[in-house]
Length: 241
Image (cartoon, rainbow, N blue to C red; front, top):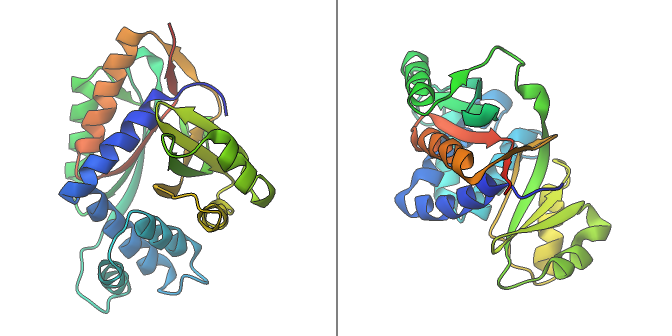
């Protein structure tokens, strides 16, 4: 991985603030419930549920919350039926955006997404116009103030860690999707504290934007993140002088 993905750094800091307001937990509850609904309650056989549960644990979600979310998904507790939708879009400067949605009202979600895009200089793309630009990766975030890139590499390189990058004061460690939680366990056993671990989407190539254009793109991404139906937002730009 190369380049400086400003959105990744800003998003990480924003997520830490959101967690205090329950936004992250709300999104994780949705994902756990849908994963359990579609694949059952056993994390050994339901890989999507395992990822969702491990992600929730990495965000310090209480076990009771996780258990209730699973039971809502399997029908053991009453819950909301969520529909999964993926929107592909373009933002200011031609940046590609993938917007992952879990909603109980697809008409509301579609209207909200269109409004946000229009307001901030973006527009929807056709199916597969953007998705091919991204691949699934494992991503682990670690405090750059507490540890060095060399420390992380030395601890995880022989166990599936593929790359590390320092973004502001955050170390981003990259793995394959299947290795992310094994690498997380290895790093923790070596004494490195993990802030978060997840499977996300990484762009194959980066689009360079000036500071001014990047600011407009960031406003759009932040507005999308604030939408209650939006689970995740992925983009492909970096800031260049």
